[in-house]
Length: 110
Image 1 (cartoon, rainbow, N blue to C red):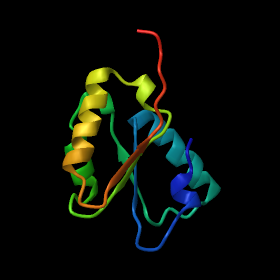
Image 2: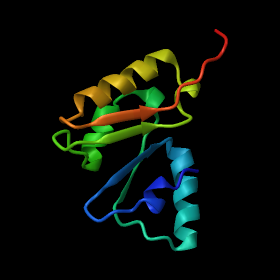
Image 3: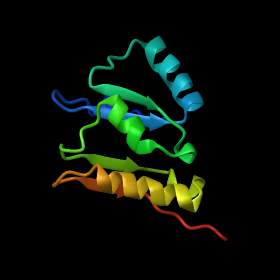
Image 4: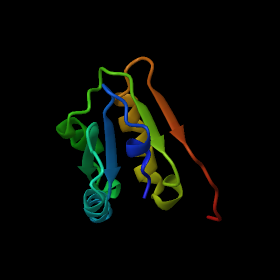
């Protein structure tokens, strides 16, 4: 599991961790067992393949008017193409000026 939010915790910065509900439940249990400080981390249990990411982020308190760094590392190759398009569309719609989308991209045979 990525621990970026814990490694780069910064006052005034909120990390929204979007993960499949099952994955996120396991990660949260492990992080809480370690007693790690979770200040500035908002967990968003959401299945990207189910759609409605915009609503999930808004419901978690993400502001579409604040610059955001969206990160998708090691993720896109596991998602259906339609889900990737929705992810990009939602990120674009929720991106205030100054926002950035960083991703890793790998190819695979069709």
